[in-house]
Length: 167
Image 1 (tube, helix red, strand yellow):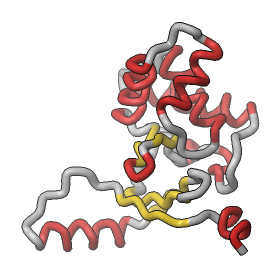
Image 2 (cartoon, rainbow, N blue to C red; image 1 turned 60 degrees about the vertical axis):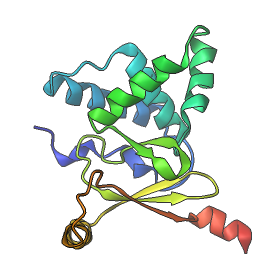
Image 3 (cartoon, rainbow, N blue to C red; image 1 turned 90 degrees about the horizontal axis):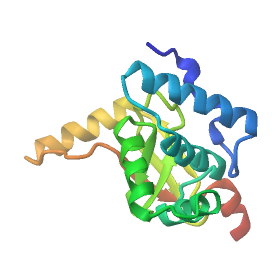
C-alpha cells in the first residue's frame, strides 16, 4: 500500500504548473498506484494526467483536447473524456462540477478530501481534509431522508492572488 509521500510535490498551493521533475515524480507515483490496483495507466491517460499537472489548476476538457491536438493532431473529444473518466474512477482526478472542469487530486493516491475550494476567477483548486466536518454534513443530509449520491463538496471563492487583484 502507498505511504503518505504520494502527496504531489509543492501541493500546488500557488497557481501555475509544477516543475518538470515534480510532474515526472507525480506521474511515476500515479503509474505505480494504478499498477497496484491492477489498472492500466495507458500513454494517453498518462498524457492527460500530465497536461492537468502542467496546468496547475482546474482545466476544461476541451482545453485538454486542444493541448492533446498539439501533440496528437487526430485527437477527438471521446479520447480525452474516456481518459478523464478513467482518471476519475481511480481517484487521481476530481471533476469540478461548478465550472465543468477537472483537477488533479493533491494527494494523488490518497484522495479522501471531499471538500474542494474553487477560485471562480482563475480555476485554482484547494482541497480540505476535514473528515469531521464532512462526516457531520453527511449525517445531517441523511437525517433529512436524502441519500447522498456524490460526497464531494465544492465551495466557491477567490484565491489569494485573485483576491489581491480586486483590492
